[in-house]
Length: 430
Ligand code: SDX
Image (cartoon, rainbow, N blue to C red; front, side):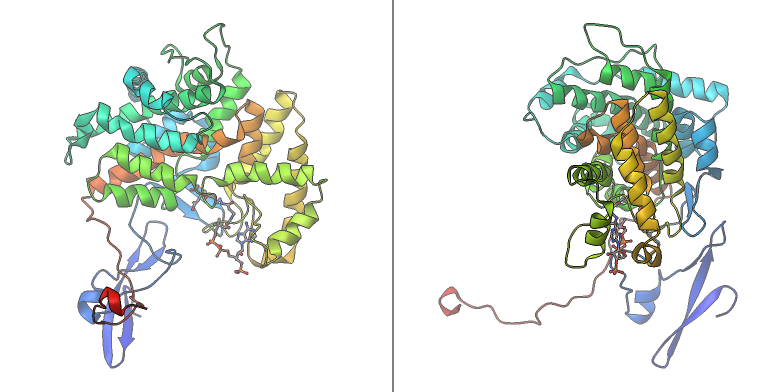
């Protein structure tokens, strides 16, 4: 291996493979010419060792527990920035100055309403429909209300308008879904409120009385949205990029990301964690029994909220959220017994060789649901809140991919099916 090349030897053939080095000294083998030169493709089911793109948005170091957005640490952003500042940072690559933030905030406030015809779609959902299915459908339907978003080569101004519209309408749609669950009348956006307070007002406000945003709740929501804002090439962000690479419109690409996030192995885990903790509580609180189930290969039970494809030390977001849990519940005067169970479960797991050997630690989903619950959200809304937070990250990834003019994503495969065979007429078939 020379300084910038690796040598791949196949039989007697040798191929020089360029080595790519990123700004944080990560290395990759650039195999973009592999098939043309050797006829070989690589195989990496689940992409555990495969980079799909270069990106300047988010940096993770799974061993050190580092998460940075455009170079700023998640610890700094979660404690010093507003969610709107982080949103601007992800999408534009820099922290906004005051004038830029004011313009960004104003433009978003001007687009918070959704077309009232959307309410017809909304009211056609059966009561009890899962909120993530509703969110996916309603976000996708925006392409019907804003056909200009279908332009496959939008000008930067048109692209910014589409991005701004979705940023503005996502909280409105999420709040509508919450109201639907209770059969309550919708509370429309109040554009005199900031982004997070407006969302809380649409969610918890009532048409019959004024809702005062509790600053503790608003601060916790701001922090949780920041902690979910982006996470490089996770399952849902990769889905958004893949769908967007076919030049599908932004709304459809984001709807696909919502679908991917819904899965219990991904964003859906935050709902599963609470259901798991409730189950442990109902079962008498014996955490060791559930630790043993999680270790049993014959048992499909997994410790939800534990483990991560990248973090093999600790998820920095989980540390921040765990600390926030104690603060928020104390400030709200709430004692939630499942927080005690969660801490006991974490303690037991971290002292168990099975989890230590596999480097399984609490991830972002392990404690987040406990705060969401304390803020008044029902469990099945938790993944919707994850999507609300992740929206700017998905859009930043989509914008980067489109701006760079990346080709349509189309992985190869290794065929393992039947060799060529003759067609069998119906009367000859067994
Ligand atoms: C998110 O990618 C991202 O960045 C995602 C995310 C984001 O911000 O976008 O961080 C958000 O999705 C967080 C993850 C939420 N999901 C969960 O909490 C579900 C529970 N965790 C897992 O199912 C699992 O840990 C994954 C899906 C998160 C990671 O799976 P991997 O990397 O494919 O690892 P694996 O399934 O191959 O597991 C490796 C070993 C296996 O044991 P062995 O076969 O080696 O004996 O660890 C075991 C697994 O059985 N294992 C677990 C476990 N997670 C992994 N055993 C028990 N409980 C678990 N939770």
